[in-house]
Length: 148
Image (cartoon, rainbow, N blue to C red; front, top):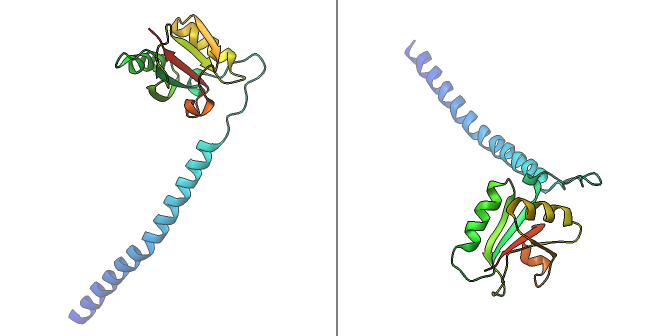
């Protein structure tokens, strides 16, 4: 009876070790599958909106740049943009300073979104990229350059 009890404990121990060794690769594989699926979903292009319709604000990414040299100006403006539902891509400094007035700039094909953002923030100037290169937007559709 004692021998049978010990054999049963050994069997249970071996089963636990076997399950632990087998479960680790299976769990690892499942995690990789989940990460790959999440990455594929994140990289899936957003379908273009119907003619005349603007995409929801949550799908519009905005880069906010400080063009006046005042410390914290871009962060403050980014907060205003975020509150209105836009996604913030980058907050930083413009390549050059001395912007006299805040301006919304846009990549080609995104004028309607830029006009809506300018209206939301009560910014009077809207322009295609002027003095900014598309790569400076870090993938964003629009840029708000904070002026003085």
